[in-house]
Image 1 (cartoon, each protein chain N blue to C red):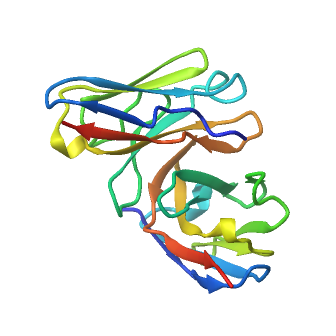
Image 2: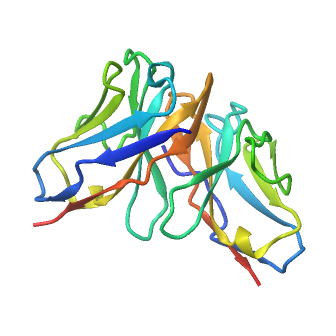
Length: 110
Length: 119
């Protein structure tokens, strides 16, 4: 159950687009379309932003989009805004019916 | 509106036990799988355990297998985590969270309860 691999940090200017990668294995990310993404602001609980690779829950901005290719999933934030500055985590269902989170990515809005 | 309220955290000595509780409201608790997820201070999220809607299936992270037990009481809308043989690296904020309907995806989260393992 090794954590999924994410870049430690990603930054961008307001209005730009950024992409966060999430690399797993053929037993988790590559095996199922049950990849989700969470946003966590300091001192707050995580918030679901994308589920089933590319679906957005009600109320989540269209600026957040997800995709997957092989063992790597990605979250793209378009039209970057100051409020998007937070930590982001991916999560996948696994072949052992467990879940595994990514290492986390700190997004900085320059 | 989903509400998940954790309790039972505190300071405990290594090797001792602690039981966490999570009170659920605002949704039909008995229809959803529920999880425990933890976050050590300044660190990332770590999935701990999940229990199916009826309690028949339970899965654990390797780091807690054999020491932690997840359970639920659907008549009281309660989730529990019995933690035995606690270690310093179990120190974390423990969240309970529920699955999305019919999908193995963690959806709503509580605010967490802090467990500190220290002598």
